[in-house]
Length: 363
Image 1 (tube, rainbow, N blue to C red):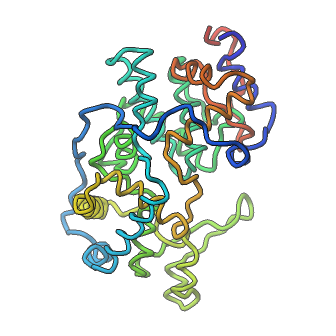
Image 2 (spheres, one colour; image 1 turned 180 degrees about the horizontal axis):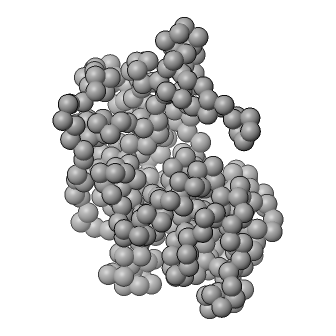
């Protein structure tokens, strides 16, 4: 569509802060762009269990003991049930969006395009709330669609605290053409869940924190967490503070950030298997168990993302872009699916490419 180009969106993001996505979603009703009540796994037939690291020396004691504790397992089930109440619709089932890709590209090319989008989404998920994750993924996916290089810093409006990690992860993915399930099990599982494979478990920050908090085991306290920003940034060591008597367990339980945010390499498979077994007993898929725990444990783990399905946040981001560009949301969705635009981001943390040479602007 004339006037709605990738460069126009980048220029808009660079020129004004806007009202902020959180303010927008708070002041506007949720988008009805997609019907989420009957959403299904996106690409049918994906159900494979990815390979996991098999620790030669077994599972570390903190993980083995937590998973064997019936009280810990009961607490995890309770937060899953709470999540089912808060968010009855599926977080990972994105078939309404995938169907738009199929309509545009046909089944074979749609699968390729959609896999790349969701793998880039996983690559930009580190330390990134879902709205910002979607925004960043839309930007890097746009660059990939247009055959443009991934810059050292993202364009204004598309930065984040972990943008360096995102750049490296996207470059690695595009170079390899696939995510590595052994090197990055969480990233790989996240993409697979969004693509329709609900067998693997995305053990993210909140999933891991919930286990530590449920166990009340100080061995799950983080070794170090950043405090402050920029030149004022320092590091606090929760586990050391506890061992020295400078941090009580009660104080730690009130500070989700003090708990380990990722399993060790030799812990991922064990925690995943335990959640898969729990999911079977509860009559849900492993991905459903993780998504409901994510929402149900929100107040305990410090969740900063809206407690709504991925596709709802995505639709709200479409509406946000449409409002600021002055066009219909359906046009924004159409241009996004075609790979011609990123979604609007607002003022960002870092400056980057800023503009594309006119010769590279998509028609």
